[in-house]
Length: 64
Image (cartoon, rainbow, N blue to C red; front, top):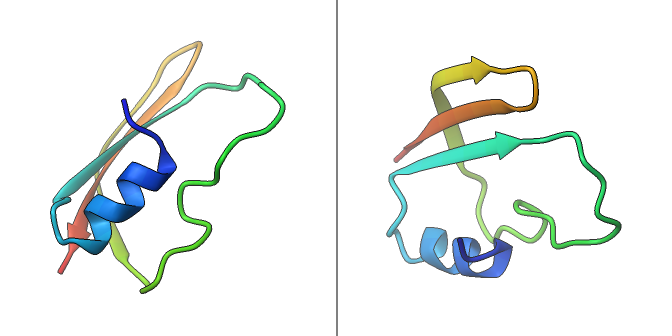
């Protein structure tokens, strides 16, 4: 829904309260790492996790 660069800009602007990651074991080749060039360290608190046969869905709250 946007990409790593848009996410990092929103996070740096203080606009992100929660993150939902949907991890699917599929290799597409190359891509942009989500947390690769973060200017500041962030702390994530897991709020939920659901394992399904095809993916893992994890939600985190950003600790401010």
